[in-house]
Length: 125
Image 1: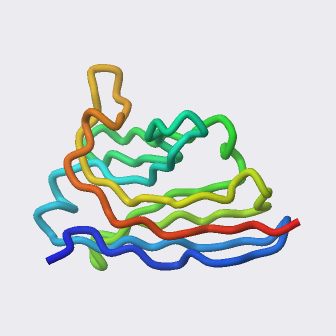
Image 2 (image 1 turned 60 degrees about the vertical axis):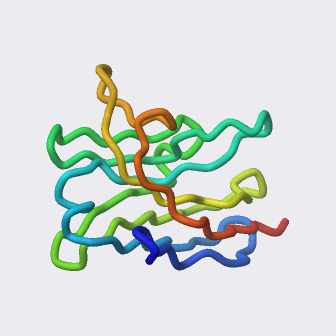
Image 3 (image 1 turned 120 degrees about the vertical axis):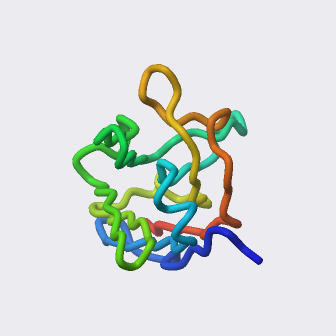
């Protein structure tokens, strides 16, 4: 049974928008930070956006700040990523994650406990 179920990826033109969704169980939703990661060109897993209800902290990678918005919905047990003004360099597989924040309040690949399978986002120029 998948613990994180993603949807919403696809093909979009430059400047377009996409909405990613990730649904999980109540236990995972309630006790963990959630967010979205991708792989860097160096094949490291890097946070795109994360949200921690327990601390109130929301993180965005510098490359997506002011273009992407992460939100959570407790009733739906889901986390969402609204992606606006998409650029070709945003093309990637986006992974939904659930985990904890480190001492600096940041969710890193080392503090992620659950990984989704990933959803492909392709931005055409």
